[in-house]
Image (cartoon, rainbow over all chains, first blue to last red; front, top):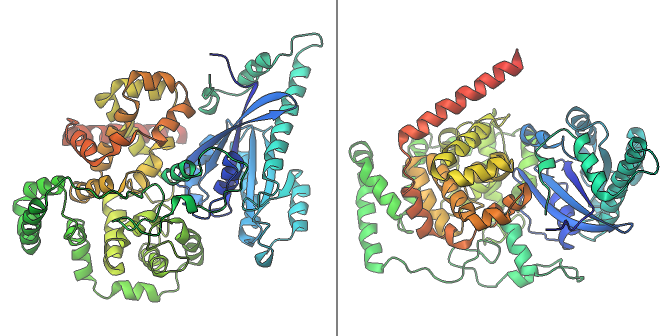
Length: 211
Length: 356
């Protein structure tokens, strides 16, 4: 069977419990919002294929439980990720402060070149806001990570966030490809992917390719 | 996971229309278990056992509950047999309370629950609990209303446990278990059942580190090799680790996995026979979902396999199929013990290696 995509990107959503990781993912994968979600226990995933500059990019997005105790099982799955969304809740100061801990977690467990993005979710709840947009931006500048405020409920910036992260991963991949391949060489998607697999250590995520 | 399944099917195909409400999947009349919608909603009344049989069973159970100590010490096999047949709904709450030892704990510490509630509680735990109150069985009549009685009681039960056992404090997987218990009994009884389940039945599952959960995942995988070798090979080939599919099964004692009637039957056995019942149910689900060769062929990858396990065919989750096949698994007490020892030793050796 022919592959129905040109690239496969593995993304990961992390952040404190209750910040809306599952809702963001549900908005992105189903374009819907549900007030009656259950808390995530363990690890879950969703898949959506997007069109990026004429290429079909399959996003395999892993959703994780936020409570600290789950980290012993979730951090094992950082390694194979090519992009990580760090999510906090703009109505919860603590979840914002914890972004630093989550970044440390990434540094300890993910590949050094993983693309990152910070999302300040629930920005529709202005009356309950505890973290200003400026503070979010400041943190992002400090860590040199892209940042955007989102609302899974109002469908604000969720698409933008995933497209941006995916585009950054794609750009980085192509740049690497150019550097390792002398000009004039074949630069087909197939070759890119093969190269990608070589670059990453064998992990559970890299085994997941779809026919 | 199961809830998302329902939402997806209720919402149908991806549409441009914003699907903020979930009205299409919610009714005004709850089903016989109290669900207004969601994956657990099952409107058609169940009639697999005749009323006269139920009546007879009820009488037997009442006699047993009145002589509980004697039955448990001298005739445990009879208790087990009756649990496997299914406890009649009318006596189930009391039977569960007796089976798990919650009644004994309650008699021993009659005032403790109230006292625990007076304590301030660890602020971090309290915050974590509050964040989860509206995220347990949101379609059930007890928990559908934000800050309704069900959610208040859920808070109390989880808080009391966190004060009683600060080492565990609050772990997110306890919330569905506590909510499930609250659907069947008053808060103080649900609390002592939760204590027994957290500390005895699922001992170590909720501890920081989740070591026991990971070990039990390895045990499950090893047992699968005996009960369904082809499925075992498939999971190994695609590196589908137990932590990816069995975490919620084990930590929530299947409360989020099974259709309601099946769940009640499995819990009848779980509280009588212990955690190995969860293993057996898991093994039946794995073999049932991935048993057919053509399913395995189609699910040729990690995600595809997980997808199959996330939505097993309804038939294999039905109470009759599940109970029948759980008892036919042909695994002895010794098999469990053997794998337990083996996997524990393996993990210890691994820890020693990485430690040295």
